[in-house]
Image (cartoon, rainbow over all chains, first blue to last red; front, side, top):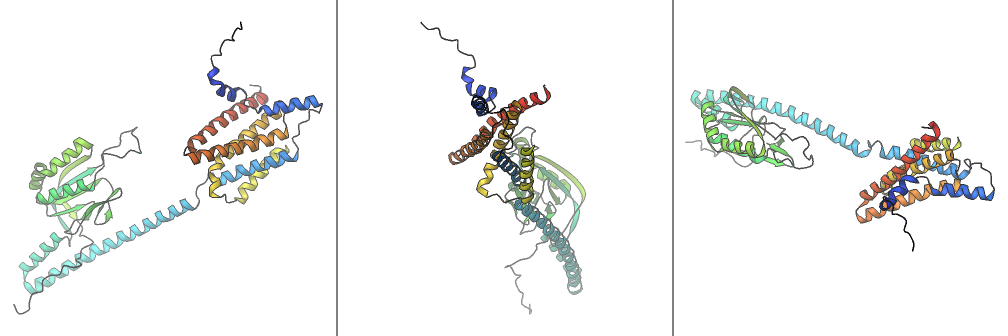
Length: 284
Length: 110
C-alpha cells in the first residue's frame, strides 16, 4: 500500500509557481552543468561574436521602438495639427467676413430707408424699416428674454464613453424657439445667430448648427419682445413645460432671465434664390 | 563591457538611422521589446550567477521574440490579439521583475 504524498496546497497554481520561482532560463544552469562536466573552464563566453551580434540586434530593436512607438508626432498628428490650424484660420475669416456683411447690411438698410423716405414719405420709410427688422436684415435692440440651456453636468465616475443622455438636442432648441415665436417674440437669435425665415436649427454629428454655423454650449436663446408677455406666455405655454421636462428628466440646466436691453446683429445669410417680389405695373 | 557597448551602438544606430518599420511589423515591436528586455535581464542575472552561456542567451532571445510574435499573430487571427499580448507582457514582465530582483540581490546584497 503506497502512501500518497500530501497534495500541495498550491498544486493548482503550478504555472504561476513555475514563472515566479524559476524565472531564469533553466538552459543557463544546464549549460553550466554541461560545461562543468566537460571540464571546461569557468570563463564566461561574454565576448563571443554571437553575443555581440545579438546585443546589437537588441539595441537596434530598442532604438527602432523608441523612434516608432514613442513620439507619434508622425504624419498623422502633423496632418491633424495642420487641419486644426486651417479650420481656425478659416473660421476667423468667416467671422471677419460676417462682421463686414453685417456692417454693409446696416448701411444698405439705412440707405434704403433714406431713399424710401425721400421718394415715398415717412410712413413708407417706417414700414420698410419695420419689415427689414422683422426679416432680420437690420440689427435690432429692445427688451426681452434670455434663455440659457446647457447639457446636464457629467457625473464624476460616469463612463466617459457612454452617450450623455442630458445633451441639449437641436430639437430642444427648435421647440424653445418656436415657443418664443408663439409667445410673441419679434426677433430671436441663438448663440448670436439671428433667426430669419430661412434659418435652420439642426444637428450635424455632435454639434448643433444654426444658420450652418456650429454652436458651442451653453446655448443662449435671446428673444426681443414685451418681457412680461413673453415670460407669462412662454412659461405658461408648451415651451416652459418642455424646458421643465428637460430639466426634470434629463438634468439639462436652464435659466430664464428678463433683460431691459438686448442688441442683436443682423442675419448674415439673407437672400432669396428663387422668390422674387411681384413686379407691379408702372401704370398703376 | 563589450556587450554593453554593443547594446549602446545598436541603440544609437536605431535612433540615428530611424529606419521606417513596415506597418505589419509595428504591432510586434512592443512585444519584441519586452522579449528582448527579458533576454537581457536573464543574461545579466546569468552573468552574475556565473553561469552565462552565449548559445543559451542567443537562443533564448530568438525563441522569446519568435514565440511572443507568434502568439500575438495567432491572437490577431483569432480576434483576441490584445488579450494574448497582455498575457505575453504579464508573463515576461513577471520574469523581468524576478530577474531584476535577483540582480539587485547580487549587486546590493539586499
